[in-house]
Image (cartoon, rainbow, N blue to C red; front, top):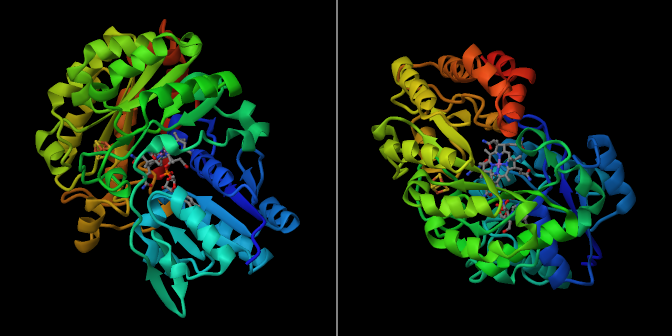
Length: 476
Ligand code: B12
Ligand code: SF4
């Protein structure tokens, strides 16, 4: 088959209203595009960021028609699954011979279901994408046996074929820097208003893949083969400097689900300490509370080199629930972490989950009180969501707990399951009450809006001004 041009599409999407208005770069596609660009230099590569270019579905269709790519590729997680399917559907309407490929956590977790529900998708790439994608393109080009490409799912003679999984890349340093040059026109528009301001350039970078914990509600560890792999510290620091110096990236969001201060904190500090950009960057990290609690000194050090916001999955106040989630942290870790972040002037962002099977009005009230006692700068409450690919999903499906199967609602703001004693509507109501108690407090709002801390002022203005509470109220 003649493959001359491939088009990566970031489809039109809604933003997550809880965290306000933002425009993220299409990171997964940029990471993949960079690899294909290096490995297959004869192929023309384009990345169409519909959000960045304000391109709607009709214009997307016209774009595909006038550019005539050989392959159209999309990526999306569960709440975005339909936007990927729609992109593939539009592609096939334009020209049924254009090949459609998709990948990412959602499609990797339910490839069979996806190929049945979305006949417009030709190939699903499961798990790590780079090597599989290049091999698939080469195989399509040479018209050899597709069934020999590891890590894909596709239809063949009326059957769905899942080839064996592909081994993971051993050394992540072999990956090129993400292809931000392919979205150069949009670079100045990438921002995250509430977190860093509308005029601060927002970029996403990857330091590690996967996780070696096994939380029952989380998709990440399984998607990445249950192991945690990091790029070398030199490479990570190099990527930070590159994004800052070449593209003016300032607000840099690490995709790493588990930062691991214990293993990388000191080395990253040493590497960044001498960098020119350390005064210019604002690093966002995700960490476990037990890791932060054990390493207050490393938080201090990383603060010196630009770490200004840390998000932690506190999840629950109930040790039994933490155990059920197989989280492996304790509530005392959460208290220690919030204090350490405060002492170091790092913005503390705590995530909580409600709606576990044993949750009642009383247990959720206790969680609300706990979240207030912890005093994080920013609290996000989520409804336990059975993402395909999680242990929780398997249990919930087997036991018939899932009431809402519309994946567009799998954004953790919609309750999709009841608990043993609460209806789904009551869980939704409890979620609204969490936000109302934390952000509806007159005293806390006044303190937030007039806080000396600029981030806190912006955040409280958003929570009050953008009607987050009203939007949650409407979901009930
Ligand atoms: C940055 C980020 C965001 C950013 C922006 C993301 C973006 N560019 O759109 C923001 C903050 C806006 C965001 C928002 C949300 N996010 Co988010 N986000 C992430 C994060 C941390 C990194 C994403 C990333 O770039 N990863 C790096 C890339 C390389 O990994 P990857 O996408 O898996 O891609 C690899 C393979 O999967 C595969 N692949 C992927 N796509 C494709 C496509 C093709 C064609 C091929 C061949 C291969 C392929 O190849 C890639 C390279 O190997 C992830 C966690 C994570 N570590 O991935 C969560 C994550 C994706 N987010 C999640 C969620 C739930 C959300 C929200 C719903 C709310 C929330 N609670 O945060 C909103 C939804 C917003 C919306 N409406 O779209 C969940 C998704 C769970 C699920 N199964 O659906 C994740 C996994 C976090 C988690 N631990 O649970 N998010
Ligand atoms: S929730 Fe965090 S610690 Fe647990 S498995 Fe997922 S990434 Fe790892």
